Length: 86
Image 1: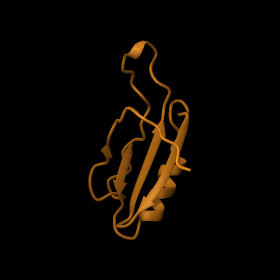
Image 2: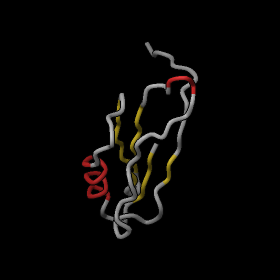
Image 3: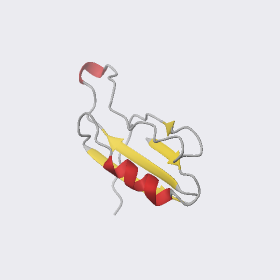
């Protein structure tokens, strides 16, 4: 998961920047979200690594320093349960 906060008033620019980024390989799924305070969040889903070993996954880079208010936050999660709503 990748999250950044744009300089005030530049949220749409950061959103378009994140949407235009091309990763070294395609994830199973990629979702781009926006939030208050000009925040942009990108969540990517990847296949489980073979043999259970961790592998390096492609990540979005840091945007230009004048576009964001602080360094990008990144988190890596491992799925432990999936439930279907109904």
